[in-house]
Image (tube, rainbow, N blue to C red; front, side, top):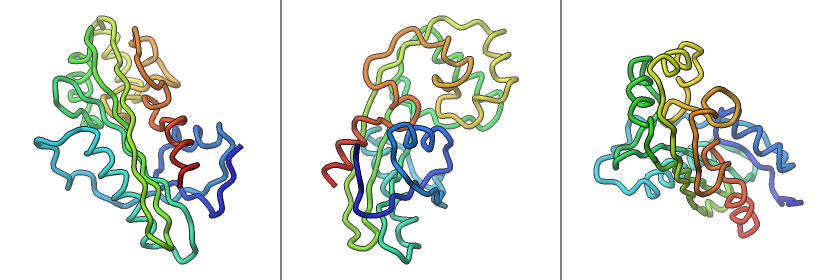
Length: 194
């Protein structure tokens, strides 16, 4: 069991990340970052560097507004297919396009994590990558999945953990929890070292 010397703050409104932190017994409070991710250019950027930069920016944003010493955890997850970053879909058509593109293919999920000590401004960043292979998807099942609303708040337009999106995944290589949005083993090691 990991015990931290300072309170932990999650700089994310993601219910999935909150669930994972509770799963490993960490106590924390939630203070979502107000960073506008659309301001970050993704041209010619290494995906691992990109998610680490976003995670760090989110953590620093929240840390800068705190009055009491805390450890702030920032995180960001992206899906990469053919070198293109797939974020959250802008609308149903965008979600359909993404899922159709992922159908029958292998893509990579990257999650960056950043820890910031709000009093010393010490920072530690890391990232994980997982290869995910989808089976062939039919247009009707893609449309049905989108109609349920689940893809709209998820990078790459799918979730593996708690809905029908799980049946799209044929094979993974790497950390399952990375796909959910928080690579727990990497987080544990990073927190221990911090």
